[in-house]
Amino acid sequence: MKQETKCIQAGYEPKNGESRMIPIIQSTTFKYDTSEDMGKLFDLEAEGYFYTRLQNPTNDMVAAKLTALEGGTAGMLTSSGQAANFFSVFNLASNGDHVIASSAIYGGTFNLFNVTMRRMGVDFTFVEPDCSDEELEAAFKPNTKAVFGETIANPALSVFDIERFAKAAHAHGVPLIVDNTFATPVNCRPFEWGADIVTHSTTKYLDGHDATVGGAVIDSGKFDWMAHADKFPGLCTPDESYHGITYAEKFGNEKAFITKATAQLMRDLGSIPSPMNCFMLNLGIESLAVRMQRHCENAQKVAEFLQAQPEVSYVTYPGLPGDKYYELAQKYMPNGTCGVISFGVNGGRKAAEEFMKHLKVAMIATHVADAHTCVLHPASATHRQLTDEELNACGVKPDMIRLSVGIENVDDIIDDLKQALSHVK
Ligand SMILES: *Cc1c(COP(=O)(O)O)cnc(C)c1O
Image 1 (cartoon, rainbow, N blue to C red):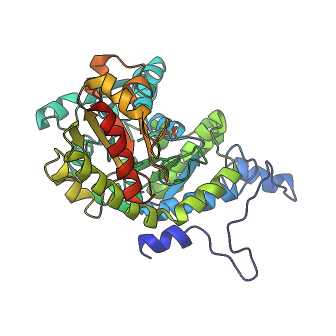
Image 2 (image 1 turned 60 degrees about the horizontal axis):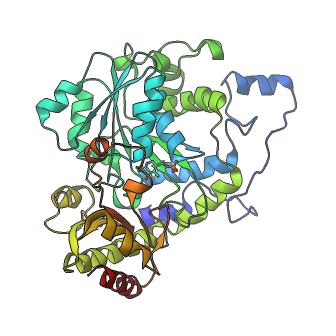
């Protein structure tokens, strides 16, 4: 099946007389005939459901659809993108371990790594996505357990050279984790370029309608855990909380990572989305391919419009010829990148605020990557906890406006920008 078809059909195949849409199994618990049946689930000896804090059938149908879209072997949904990124890293690295991350990542992820996970004893080295081979090489330590980056960074809009970072990670015997939120599996499939684990904030294009917060973790099934058993004792040595099973042996490379994340992290941290939210996420994914095409078409026209305006000091969009990341975008996302553009207006921070005040179609919202056109001033919103130095390190200029181009008629969006720009002349 092609991506457009998978968006509609993957993950759930109704049998004769069953509901056409995925059923919403809004139940915390599941009934069994004997305690022995139930015991087998607790021992991971049988597959099935017993409590929705760990797993739910509706959630798993939608996870299966996303797994098919990414070309992976196993996947899970989480209650937010933050939870997904936390799970993806903490499933591999704990107290005393080290992780390399691109410095051009979402502000919330940067804070999760740099503050909260450091407090848990995980050390991070941040490298610029365009660092030299020597700088990347120097970042690895004996206790490095993973490398992390974003396909298209939010909000820096730099394109991550997945193939290059995957090669470096694999040379050191560790997996590459890629947050594919902005590109979506319609425009980029990181597994095809060597990534091992993909994460998503499904809150963005996948849901697409400002309706549900959520996340996903998907495994390519390609990383050979037992070949690097000394680095990954959590996957390659017995888990005493499950009668001594070894995930990598019992579940193989295809399922070990997600089974461990479910059995340990979901069990203990409980970041599960509600079945109702997963049902709504599935509705969003059904139209993902069509929406992404429209987002990219609209954003391309808006970026070209902005570039031609004298009031605009710069435009960053990886789909624009001449953009620093145009070539990488052509390589990884030949059919389009995303709907998000960033730009500055002459007059800096103050002019940016004045311009935004006059917008009517584009709404000021702490959101991005959905059907509605919206704008945000990252330095005074999502990234306000970062210092100017940290802002620059993750590619956010203090005067930068992040414009998320929706799927409205593009003429209405451009007219709105035109009239708002007239106020900063
Ligand atoms: C929004 C976002 C996140 C965090 O996701 P939430 O669903 O808001 O928790 C992580 N990564 C990227 C790239 C994002 O855009």
